[in-house]
Amino acid sequence: MKTIEVNQIIDNARFTRFHWMVTLLCALLLVFDGYDLFIYGAVLPVLMKEWGLTPVQAGALGSYALFGMMFGAFVFGPLADRIGRKKGVAISFVLFSISTFLSGFASTPSEFGIFRFIAGLGCGGLMPNAVALINEYAPRRARSTLVAIMFSGYSLGGVLCAGLGIYMLPRFGWQSMFFAAAVPLVLLPVIVWKLPESVGFLLRQGRLDEARSMLARVAPQQPLDEAAQLVLADAKGAGVPMLDLFRQGRAMGTFMIWLSFFCCLLMVYALGSWLPKLMANAGYSLGSSLSFLLMLNFGGVVGAIAGGWLGDRFSLPKVVVAFFALGTVSIALLGFNSPMPLLYLLIAVAGATTIGTQILLYANTAQFYPLAIRSTGLGWASGIGRTGAIVGPLLGGWLMAAALPLKLNFLVFAVPGLVAALAIGCFILWYRGRQEAPAVSGAVARPAV
Image (cartoon, rainbow, N blue to C red; front, side, top):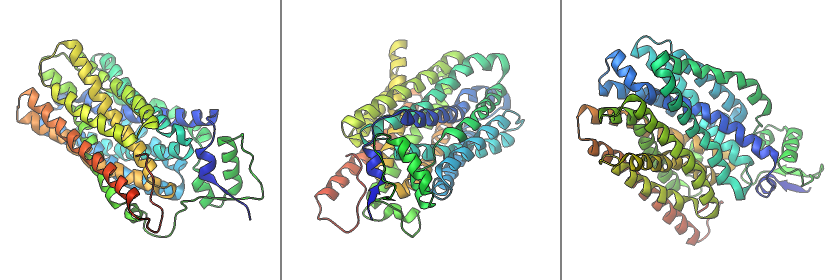
């Protein structure tokens, strides 16, 4: 019987309106996700004053949502491989939107922390599933660029959060920032209607007609033989999903990916949670401090799109190494006295090379793992990375409590960038070694190194 390899159809497809629809829908979801994640940094100076929080308490409170994100990534990544990525995305979206809205009603830090933890579960589940969905349907030649465009929604959410904070915090109080998170729920019917299901999931479920229909939308110029059988080259076998991340020679690559995620997310959330407060302590007004947060996220948008474009034309892991090195330098320089234009430039570069690099890490990870375990690989990488996200706000709180000079705070925030650059450098050398080694049984994933 004639067979049709699904991945070849998708990899070689021309770019169509279908790809734009999937990219923009996922980007829209990540706008709301990014808003939810950066909201704590925007309201932190107000909460510390209203609830009398010490820096250590504020850092711990900021980590509640990140604990939730870690568990959400661990749970919803593998779960989506079983129930479908569309359902995984929809459940995650509803969960974090409702929980963020309820956070506005919290009257104590304990209540606030519980709602933030639940919201984190949804945020942690949405991100890896959205990335996996984009990677599944994107043509190979534009894959990194589309993931970067989609993930720029995450940074736009941070820009939206900072912009609304400048306007709403002085007029309506910190609660209004959380109440606004319920507005995106009106788009849930559109997301359920338009967001496609994973074609790999459809095939595993035996829903062959739906899979053929989906492929016809992905590559309308390529007719499908009705008598041919659809197959996936990397169809999932039996076993424990998490253990598959270490099989077929993937162990070293998996560990290096996890380490880079940990370091990158530590920097992202240390800066996202504490940049406004650090700048306020340095003498800047609350409005100016929030404008720094806005510039950080604006840089993330530019960095993600530029990095994705460079990754499709050069080596994506090499671009990641360069971004980490540049981020290390820019963050370290933030603690020194600089003219205002230079300070904004350094913050934008720091955003481009931390938030933007996080996005590139997701793209590289999705390309590293085969389709059948892609959500699991992304979920575990994101979950391990969330331990770094948890450490980031806590680290900022400890540094604030120690009353160190401003430059030392930023020097400490810069160190993980150097570690992450070394980790991805080892990833590149390991993969080259795998290419040069004698062939072994079983195919190894082929990232764009």
